[in-house]
Length: 151
Image 1 (cartoon, rainbow, N blue to C red):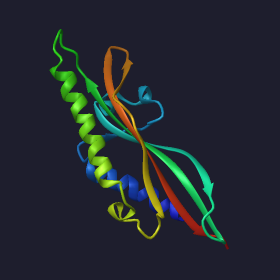
Image 2: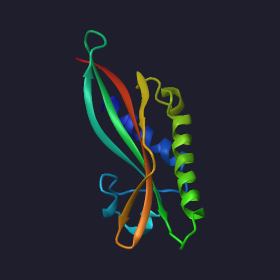
Image 3: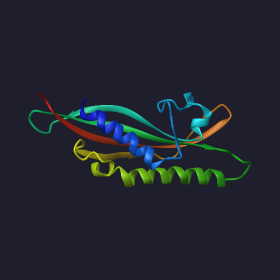
Image 4: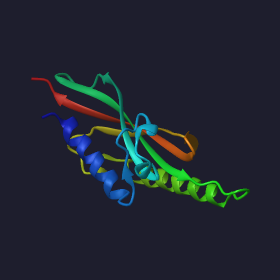
């Protein structure tokens, strides 16, 4: 196994620990394909592209991009913005908690496998509508540099 397996599993474990009451999306790439019960308050991890980075001789270094999505159902009550504000603040808090934890390889217990971790984008709050239901979501994109010795 390569380092990416350990890193991926550590990311999943850490997110599960940070958000124990949230469900994990079955398909974070298309939130509409997830069951309603999962979408009520959930998170998902998308594995994005990677680019090679020159570091040291005989090392293969890949800078892998990941995106975490936080999704929460929004129930609209005629003329009341309180529910919208509560869901918005909940997602903002989720994003802040993630940023406070995923700023260093040490914080996710993978200092031996991760050379660098950087948060590259924190989205604003967005809306997705599926049938009669409305959801708000926010994403965070982060990059992890992993180097392995080439044999």
